[in-house]
Length: 263
Image (cartoon, rainbow, N blue to C red; front, side, top):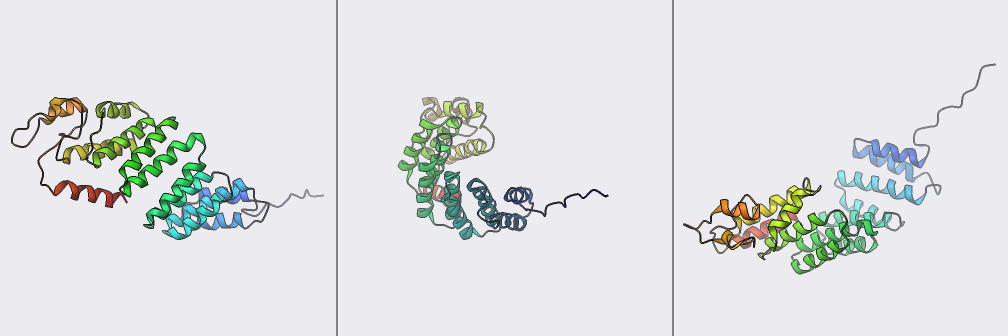
């Protein structure tokens, strides 16, 4: 008598298989279909798996530029409980991309309040970024200070981001050389760390007055409008002069362009 072998289960017969198919999808349409199949399998889907499937669905809608729908899906995921801060953060990102800055701020506050200790500094950092883009420099710096108190691995990035915000607002950044050296020596020097180093160098190059407080020699009396840039680079570690001559309207125009491009 021939041996009867059970037939192979159909694809995505369990929520976990649907999640795996979504994770392996190379196109957003495929990711969306797989996530929707998994969510349609009924009440047997655990909350953890639901949240993970909803996040794949969120990512698919973001890739398809359906940001309103993405924000709604992230809000739905946040109501389930697991990874709540990540879901609120995702919703905030979508709302910010839609130009709804106030709602994005409120949603990111929820992300910060619901974050576990190991992610609290990250969520506060996201809140400070939105506050900076909204023009509330004092609130952004205060939020970064709070984030630094709970930071575990990203303290160097937070300090550099605070220096960037100060320089962008035309304020002095104390201990700038130490801040930059610490960031370069940290595991976070690449990626966003490299972005911060570049933005700080850009702000110092185009600032109309001394922005760094490394040494008095850095702000030496310039010759024909230019300081000794080599001395500045040796002192503060940024390969750009601390300041240069510019018109009275150049700095406000530059700062406005930076804020508009970042938002």
